[in-house]
Length: 253
Ligand SMILES: [Zn+2]
Image (cartoon, rainbow, N blue to C red; front, side, top):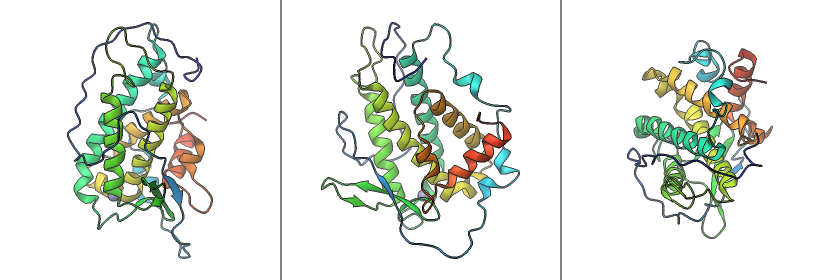
């Protein structure tokens, strides 16, 4: 069943908890307004060979809590409304990602991460109120993204939680946008903070969360391959991880 071709809902559901506590809030998005989509830019060409990142190295590339692939846990359960299922999973991904980021947030500073890097030559830019692409420090960028998502999750018109409230027609495209921004946060953490996750021995947890997130994105058409891979001049670090996990059978081809 296609998530994007289905906009119907018949079930009621329990209220989701919706408190975000880990990272500070400073962004001021209107809950009904999409933030302008940031776009990748290429800061400077690089000539020296790039060492292989730790997240692509054994044993870390295969560290996981869940063995096998994620197909079965992303499938729509019987009798569950597809909108409901996607909303619930997006909420869980957000909550988990926010907690992981909260753990490494003290290492993600304006000094350590002056731009939102996600690969050796890739840094995402933010479109500001004057519609200009600007580089933001990664902690600022991530705070904007996470605050924006939190506001959407709290917005009853976007993520309805009460009986009798329907999902809006725009729900699939909103979710796709949310997914894309969360993917960028994952991409930054892998690129810039994987060694800190290793230090905390959290890599099996984080890998499992990310593999689940990718499998879910594939299943519900939220994942755009160009967001995973980037361009040839500015590849996303996690693009190679995605390929390795496909080879290993963690993700389906
Ligand atoms: Zn950082």
